[in-house]
Length: 218
Image (cartoon, rainbow, N blue to C red; front, side):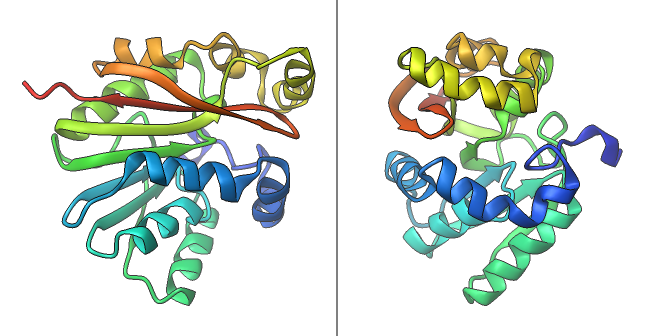
């Protein structure tokens, strides 16, 4: 699991220290993450994985929403995981944050009830997105759900223009599937079912879409 294979949260390690304020301002973070937690609706006793957890904001929100769930965060960036652990400790929350990659999840088959992910998939190549979807399908229990918030098809030309800044920054190949609205199809190719876009939100840097998919109950 080589460190060279992960992408820092703002593309460059030097920018990690400003990740939280940038995301908070540019993406309407509090709103879209609250929408995603509402959509996931965590229940007592569930085991939940926040994939590409970054500084732990969403994982902490989930734990606060459902204290009786076990919440695990995973990210490939050791520095950002330290920030996540510090935030959880400051909030007096018992949580675990693991180092790993979305394409090679270090967990057993059928070991989670829910998987969440925010603003991570647009960093990945199409091949890595497919590998990640397959890994999510593998670690979800039958009937378990994936809940994602990430950039989607622009709602209008202005949203497309604003998102072009992100595309220059994060790569046109990596963001191509997002712009084309292909994430539900990628989730389906990875082995999940009922993959749909559930909502969308205009932001300063493009359209954020919410998605849901699940592992078959059989």
